[in-house]
Length: 203
Image 1 (cartoon, one colour):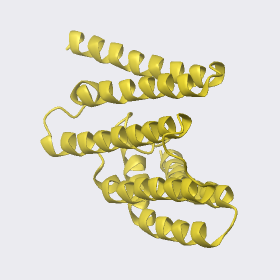
Image 2 (cartoon, one colour):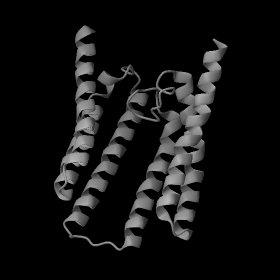
Image 3 (cartoon, one colour):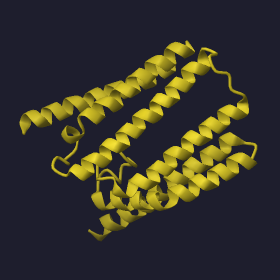
């Protein structure tokens, strides 16, 4: 048990180190191509380490279904990261040239896929500190976690469809995307926070 806990702590520290390294590289490295490659490598490495050590990094060691859901989610995260990195590299090297509208459509499709996938998987996602809507109050209480992810499951598809409609009809794509993401994270975040406060005050 002690060795398992120690090994899990080492993996968490490595994932945290890679995440911080990615942020520092993005801030410090001025060469766009080098920055994309290094940041992408750090983030992919962190997600792959998480995937390979899911049972070690969570308390879920015997439930194959829950581990399977976490693995599916982590694989999806790896694919989204890989697609984003490949797209950025191809554009940076001028291998593919996209119009401004083409880039917006690609971004809209990627964001919408993430929302829809999250809506499908969220209600089944087990309580974990590594995968899901990680807010200070959701990772501290399983009931709050379940409330947040249940709401995320209900609202993801409607918000994704509304986002696509607005992105195709409103000229300010950045504002539309920010508003959609704010609603997508904000609604379950606020509701779960209120639930958490009520639960804590009830104690």
